[in-house]
Amino acid sequence: MWHVLHTAPHGERSLAKYLAVQGIVTYAPQFPRASGTKPGSVRDRRPGWVFPGYLFIEPPEDFERWDAIRWAPGVRRLLQVDGAPAVIQDSVIDHLRRRLLERSLMAERPRFKPGDRVVVQYGPLAMVDAIFDRELSAPSRVQILVNLLGRPMRVRVDRAVLATPA
Image 1 (spheres, rainbow, N blue to C red):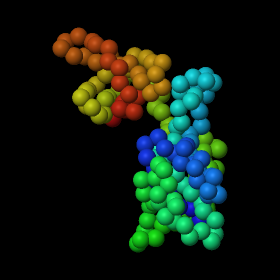
Image 2: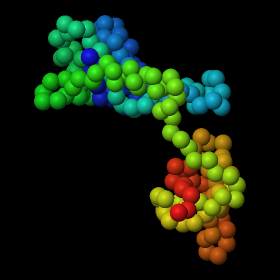
Image 3: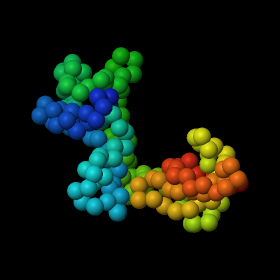
């Protein structure tokens, strides 16, 4: 049976090491690295946590030292249901691992071609019609052309805020 810990910011890795020394199995699922990531680059070293700030733990069957986990360095809290540690079935963790191996948890990014009409869905330019210009070198940033004040302007936005017009 698995349980869930809420960790301090960026504390997943160090907490997992600490608990491993205590004999507790941990799992902090990460997205696979992007195919264009260069080994050793900043993007390569940055963990892509599926659940940032959370760590799955699997203590031994006869484990009763919950205070040792609750007060471990980097633990904010142990997720609970009715005062007892919340339980996650092994099948859920197995399914999560399988999906990550198959790369089926990766979010589908809409692909636009230069010249495609797009609509900004969120942010200060919400509901503005635009024309897709190009992808940028930043992983999720794109450039669009927006007609502002009577002239086209290049604006850089997050790809996730764009949609095709209805």
